[in-house]
Amino acid sequence: MASSSSSALPRFGHRFQSNYQVEKLVHGVFSLSSTFVLPSLVLAASGGCSYQSRSGIGRILCLAPQLCDPETLTVDWSELAIGEARSDDELLASVRLRVRSFYEFNQSFNIEGHKEYVVEREFEALKERVAGKRTGIKRGSCINITAPLSHLSNRADDLCRECKYNDNEEQRVVIATLDLNQCLCLADELPGKKPEGSGPDIPRAYVSNVCVAKELLRNGLAYALVLNSKDVARTWGITDLYVHVAVDNVAAKRLYEKTGFTFESEEPAWQARFLNRARRFLLWQGL
Image (cartoon, rainbow, N blue to C red; front, side, top):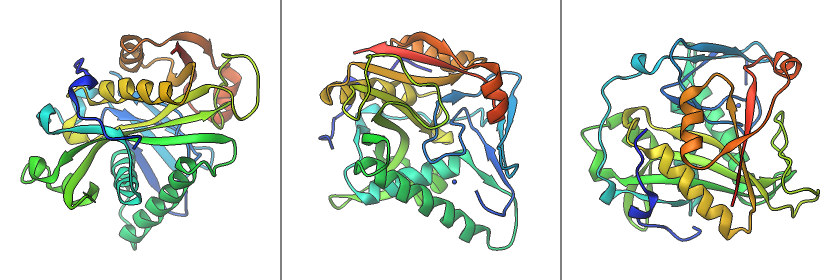
């Protein structure tokens, strides 16, 4: 990914499973989890891999980058804005981007209704995290990169239709998103070791749910999101920031190394087998 600096962007103020068969496809960037908090950024690596959910309902396919929309659009960074979501409308647009990026639904009866069901479940969970009402999470934030609708119209019609929202009478589109959560640990994930201690006020946070629109990959958007998440975490008083990544995902590890993360621990093989997924590294960064 290109190393685009988030300082060039205007800053806003601090500011899923059913009876249907679902294939969770990825287009370069995705997260793996059967919980509402998707635990990691995973970039598609050459050779590919697959993940079977514990329920047996969902499957995630990791595709080689060259197989994932080789031609993507470029962005004008002067038109973009990055910051914490400021409204429910923007949160909903963020969720729609995640669903269109992480999932491909097999053709079935009432497929659009099922998509809306998935969107609504994730939307309610995201609102709870951001409001600090999710058990085990002291504080949560959804950080987005957005573009004016006019900047993308006629170039990415599906993205504009699904992920647009109103911001002070201007129509914008969420083109990249992630979550930042202050908590002891994320569900089904290795807990961080720093700082020592326990309790809801521990200054530890996790980056998760990184998502970039498939039409706009390789523009440095994920890099800019991670940098901005560090800025937000510092305003919260966070001293230790964590992220989980698949052990064989070279591209994702390279991204995190560029933004200052280092190795802390590795998920035991038995735990990965129990959760039916690739093993994870836990990466740490002091702020």
